[in-house]
Amino acid sequence: MRKKWAAAAVIAVSSLALAGCSPSAPEGDGVLTLWHFEAENSAMGIAWDEAIKVFEEETGATVEFEEKSFEQIRQTASQVLNSDQAPDILEYTKGNATAGLLASQGLLTPITESVEEYGWADKLAPALQTTARYSEDGVMGSGEWYGVPNYGEFVTVYYNKAAFAEQGIEVPTTMAEFEGALKTFADAGITPLAQAGLEYPLGQLWYQFLLQESDRDFVDDYQLYEGEVDWQSEAMKNATDKVVEYVDAGYISPNASGLKAEDAGVSFINGDAPIFVSGSWWYGRFADEISGFDWGIVPFPETELSLGSAGNMWVVPAAAGDPDLATQFIEITMRPEIQALIGNNGGLPVAANVDDITDPKSQELISAFNDINEKDGLAFYPDWPTPTFYDELVAQLQELVNKTKTSDEVLDSLGQSYDSYAVDFRE
Image (cartoon, rainbow, N blue to C red; front, side, top):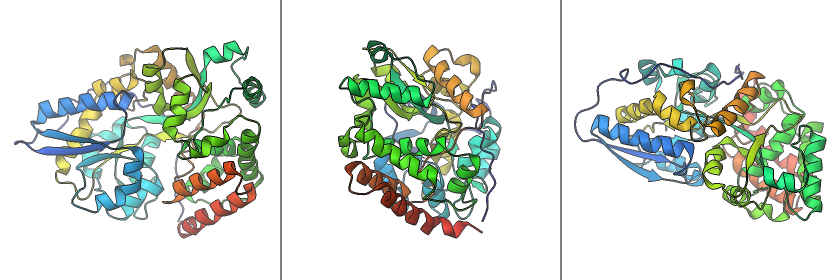
């Protein structure tokens, strides 16, 4: 089955206050159980903490919030949501392999009626809706709404301005300049790239290498099963070989295979690694925690495509005890004042009043995101195509870094895993 998708994603800004659009609050002292995995001082953590306060004040209900890690939710969602332990609402990752899979299994509540009732589709640009809607087979881009994103996200290059200045390095705009900067740091005894092979960062770097030599047709083939993917193509081999090259050159630590995303992020925060290729979800935390040096972001060089999409979503489990309360909470998170908190704390709001975004750092981030969107540059994430591909990609790239598999062997394993799932969705 072939699905068409318009890939452009833009920050949707609106001056329409949503207060007053929602139905009357429920009577009684209900309880809304809520899970999310955002750090307390992240843009979303700050905004959602305020949303909880507003929700409790307006509805008279109580929120029982349980903080979960990304990995906790990712690894246990199918089991938990198929039990009486399911929350009423939770933050969940988007894409065929995650939200799409749960939707196809009947574990999520379709919320299309609430989307229409609250007018959320009018607040979200069409491309931001792509990862919120899923077919009966769990393929994104069409069908019922199963979630609502509150923010956008993309992967960029964070760099330590002080470390660059100390080594006399200009901000790179070409791949030659980027790799020249990596070499200068390595020659000075500094491992330049903060990396983590135990979780998502290394897979995202690999995908960015792949996107440098790919186009929109490849993205549609890879992500939406529009056509077959050649796992031994020149682009695939070059991206995989590039990971090996960076380890051999000292740009990535050989110990990265045992490090988590948190380890990589903290190494940038502490000034140990001068470059971190990762997501906009780190931006607010860096703004809050980095005090010893100035830092900035720069696009990954020589590519028209970047990792990114609408952000993670609020979803309502099929086993939720009070789905009406859940959708009322979503409505509050879409209000301009809550969206402005995301924007002014380093996040990318989807329904903010643009005049409410006053923080210079946040304006920098939003500008970079808009630049990508203007060239239709969002290409999703490498682990999305199959339910098991995240674990497969992590494991295979660990083998690559540890030199227990060659590039060709890694690509063979990834291709077999991918094709065994994708074949069922192609004509």
